[in-house]
Image (cartoon, rainbow, N blue to C red; front, side, top):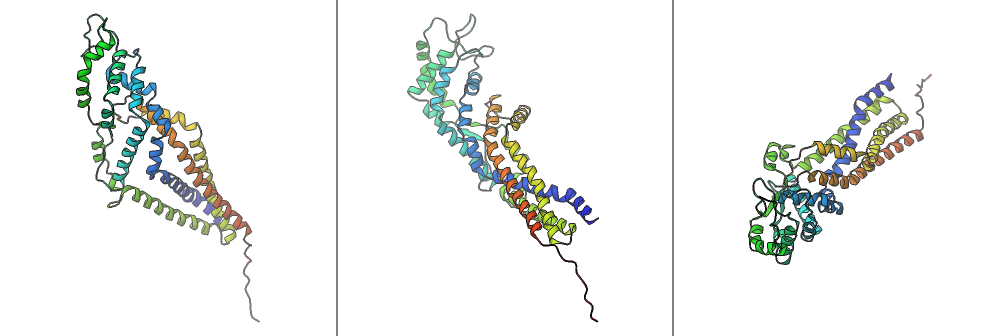
Length: 345
C-alpha cells in the first residue's frame, strides 16, 4: 500500500515537476545568453542566405518593382561588395545587445532597426556608378506606350529603346546622389514594435526585477519545490534508505531519458519540417523583407538548434547519471536489520 501510494504520488507530482525543472534548466542555459543569439544570427549560413539570389534578388525585384523575368545578377554582385559580412554581423550584434540591454534593465526601451548609413556612405564614387550601370542594364526596354523611368503608377520601370545603356546611366547619374541622400538612415525590421512592446509588460514579470534575473529566480524556486516533492516521495516509498535511494534514482532517471530524447530529436532532422511549417503559418510582421523573411528565420532557427540540442542532452545526461549513481548507492547500502526489543529478566 505504501509503495503504491508513492508511485501515484510520483506520477501525479514528482515526474511532471522533475521534467519541468530539467527542461527549464536546459532552456534557460541558452535563452538568457546573448552570445547564443549573436552566434546564431552572425553565422556564415545566415549571411549566405541573406545574400543568396532567392532573397536579395527578390528584395531587388520588390524595391525596384521589376518583372520576375528580369535578371538582377549584376545588381546583386554590386550589393555583395557593399553589404559585407562584417557589416551584417555588426548590425546583428547591435540589435541583440539593444534587446538584452532593455531586458536587463540597462535601457528603458529599444527599437528593432538596422542602420544603413554605412551603406549610404559606401554607395559613393565608383561603387555608385557601378550600381547605377547595373540597374540600367537590368531594366527592360520600354514597350509602346510606356514612359521611360523607374516606373509610375500602373507601369513597371523601363529604359528607352535604341538608347545605349551608358547614355541612360550618364543622364541619370546627376540625380543619384540626391536619391541616396533621401534614403532613411535606419530601416525598421518589425512594424508597430512600440505598440507590441507597450502591450506586453516585459518588466513586470516580477516587479522591480529585470526579466532575465526574474526568470532565473523562478527556475531556482522551481528546483526547490522539485527537491521537496522528490524527497517527500522517497520518504513515502519506504522506511529504509536502501529503498529510498533507489526510488530517488529511478524517479530522476525516467524524466532524464525523456529530456535526453528531446535533445537528440532537436539535433536531428526531425524539427526541420515543423520549423518550416510553423514559419509558413506564423505572421511576424517583418517589414521590407517580404516572403524572404521566412527563409531567413528558418536558417536562423536551424543554426540555433545544435546549441539547443546540446543543452538538453547535457541536462538529461547529467541528471540521468546522477539517478544511476543514486540507484547503485541504494543497492550498495546494507539492508536495515529489524529492531528487536530487549527485556530484562
